[in-house]
Image (tube, rainbow, N blue to C red; front, side, top):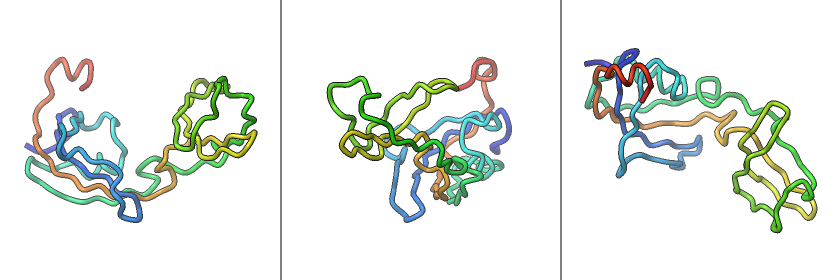
Length: 151
């Protein structure tokens, strides 16, 4: 059975940045489970999975427009430390939830310098090409419950 819309694909993957450094993997853990055609994964990977079968192994290079989109400089801000309601300064790499005019936004602290803290609301892979090694473990028809509520 091939991966197609509304079928459940189970797969292992290893994600590498553009310099070849491994960022994350499902190997040694439970594989990813995805209902194809629902937009639950980046478009470049979903497109590459289409038509694959259990046992298929492949590598895909995903450009920003098919991955996490462009890097938006306006999502990087340097703010006064006084805006943070904490007894301690956040640390570089720490994830925070910012309240914006458009609602909550996950940000990462990218710099701490005296009385200022720089945060970035972009996905860490925004504006970057990355590579994914994939092994399809299983392909099956979605259950009625999965079709109604997702995976």
